[in-house]
Length: 77
Image (cartoon, rainbow, N blue to C red; front, side, top):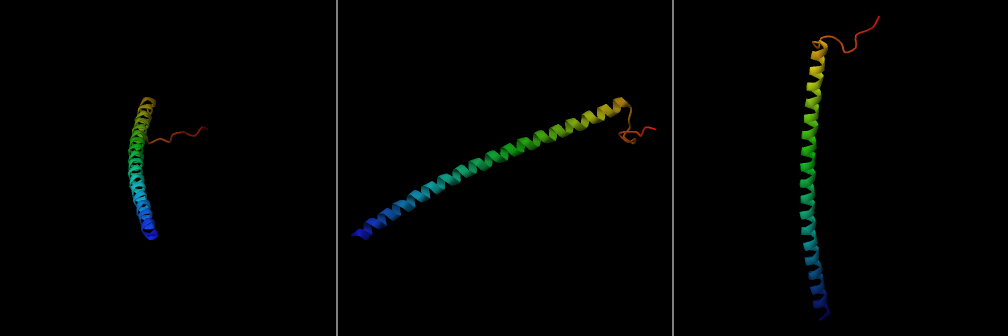
């Protein structure tokens, strides 16, 4: 009769383990999705910052009268 009790306890422990595993998978998926969204937003913001920097560089070069063919720092003699 003792083996029936042990079998029931083992079955209950396996069910508890399964429930905890399912919850862990759900939480891990949510965290992975949050990381993906954050990386996407960060990459988009970085790209926009790079584009703005390039546009500013072009505008400053245009105001300085540079065409892009000359070196950035002309040698001084």
